[in-house]
Length: 178
Image 1 (tube, one colour):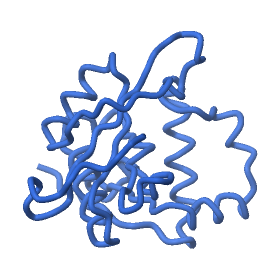
Image 2 (cartoon, one colour):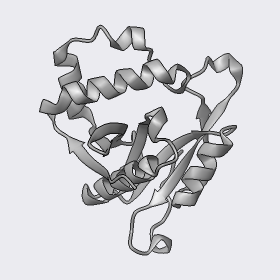
Image 3 (cartoon, one colour):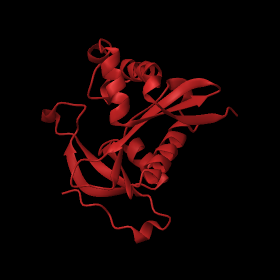
Image 4 (tube, helix red, strand yellow):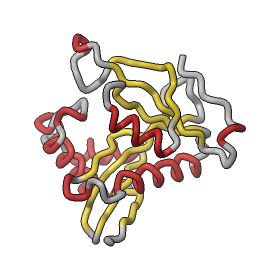
């Protein structure tokens, strides 16, 4: 079995983030709000600024990039809640545990940063995504929003799933999403 490692990228690692982000946009265009064509023209200063807005975690398998995820602060009023977003795994690494390792590293990072919960938005019609998040310990909420990767006219929604980050998850109240 090939070892999977996950590391936090710093501002100086913007080329590695750019490479993985563009690969994700090219390979899975329907999974993201932005497009490959939009982001491929971004200059270095914009990529560096992105590195400072959220934590970018890169998974490597056998020494090669295998996946990426980002961790950022949830919008107000959800203080203490981090959001996991931009999760993508290379096609050859799917089903090998890379996604699990990325989410675990994201949860660990959010907890280390002082967050009480980690939120993950999943399409309500995405059975595999909901099952994956549930198996990890994320709990569904009643909070919904229009799917951000499709046009609002499609009527598709995504729901916030939350993962308590305390040692005793039952001791942590759920965040308010309203």
